[in-house]
Length: 433
Image (cartoon, rainbow, N blue to C red; front, side):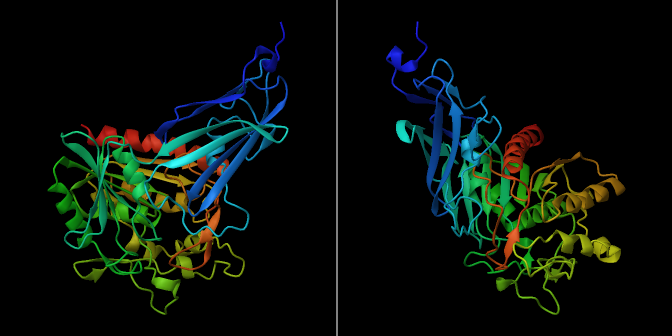
């Protein structure tokens, strides 16, 4: 009996499972009914993502039954190299020359991914997948109360849920994507802006910690919020902020800090203007908190060849032991466990900056667990999994310089998926007790 799929009367098709799921769900892609032993190219397109249509592709050789299993087969050519069920998702790239401004989705609307399978340059089959940052039953409510700029996400049901405040980094504005995804896993979440969106300050300068206290107290009054199970999650400068909030407010019972710093750094005014006396980023009771004055204005950084790697400036600044001592976050005051996530190829030196927090906790015999997960091939962008990881640099919206993030697309993809699973498990373990 012939093994040629065409002789079996089977039309070429793409089989995808699931076709509608959360963005962190694994997808199985199989092809059937194709010419036996022939190359088949699978193309993926995601429209309207960060302003462009992103594309990826992978060519496989169909087996003797005319089948391809994208999950287990190595591409013979394409935008990724090793067998990976999600390779076509994370290896997507924008059009050549596109000036991508953002680094994460600007809305929580579903993402549509169109797949086509081509043989000899002709489309033989197609399929579509819907990827959701927010489950259909999750509610989204804009919050503009008591001076707050935030978005509240609630999972379905009427019971009380553990709660997470999500803060973004030095790009400012609202960071809704991880908040929506966490809510889809059963947490009440508050995506909280603290600058970069009206009527908040335009730059990361003199942000009062009392603002976050207001947010916590407002949140604890809302229905469905488990007031004794509150965590904070942040990335980059938001990771620094998450550690600072945990050390300042005893209401916070767990901290997740992506690519964070264990020391406080200077503020970032709009335009990234270098000043003779740099401004503080944070204040408490009207007084600036001690901060490092090196880093992004350090002479160790090569500003003439963008994209700029900021790591040398941070590393050089850490040599000033007096400033480090003054600016180190007192993480030992945190009333719960801490999870730190970093990339060893981060061109902002997040592993070394995270280790400052670990040393401080050890020196003061911190009573709770501190875990640091660091990924060898990963860079600075490590949150929502299975989104494109091909963006290696961009113009910073506040500093207006091209910043390098480091890592490799495959390294970032692995780190995002692995870290996200650890984050969800960490929050469940320590908040659902």
